Image (cartoon, rainbow, N blue to C red; front, side, top):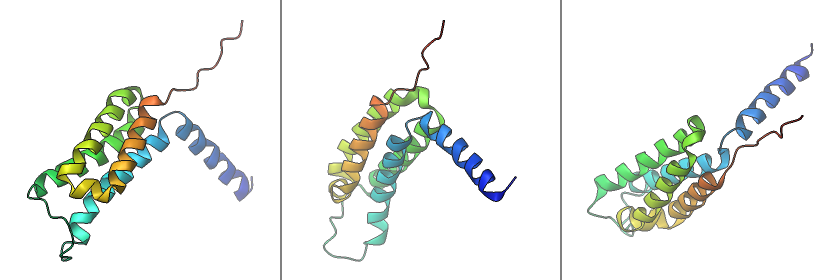
Length: 128
């Protein structure tokens, strides 16, 4: 058994894991939460930043978006509820999280939540 066979086997396992859950919806939702969380902390000193008085709500929305993104990978059966939650949090990020992370975080969350809610698992056809 060569090293390339081991790599192929690992890639096959990862590909099977990725296809058995709403991977891209979870990834975009996770990135949305990270982006929403990064702006208040990385650009705090810039005077052009739209500081909201609800800074705690920004951290809460960002943290819940990250948790939803991870749960989409770990609990694919709950994809519709988690996808709708991601969409609603993305909409709520506009007034509470610096205009939705300057709209980038909001768009990532909307697309990720929509992909997660619309994802369906592959069903093998029954053979007689």
